[in-house]
Amino acid sequence: MLMLRWIIAGSAAISMIPIAAAQTHDSNYPVCLQKWEWGGSTSFECTYTSWDQCRRAGWGLAAMCVNNPYWAQRQSGSLGGGRRRLAR
Image (cartoon, rainbow, N blue to C red):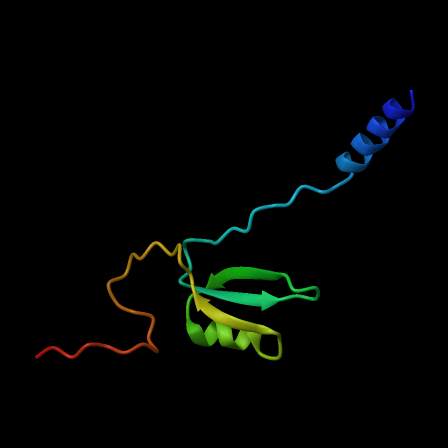
C-alpha cells in the first residue's frame, strides 16, 4: 500500500512538469537575434531582413545577430557585410 502511494505521488509530480516547446526559426527572414536570458538559456527571434535592423533591435541587450540557418534563399545576392569575390 505504501508503494502505491509513492507511485501516485510520483505520477502527479511528473504530470506537473511543463512540456518544453521546440525553438522555431522563421525561414522567411535571413537574420536572427540570439538573446541570452537569465539562467543561461537563449532564444532566437528570426524576424529581421537586414543586419542593421537586427543590431538596432538588440542594442543594449545581451544579444547578437546571426545568420538564419533555415533561411530559404530566394535571392541571389548576399545580405551585405560579407566579403564579395571580385571577378577576374
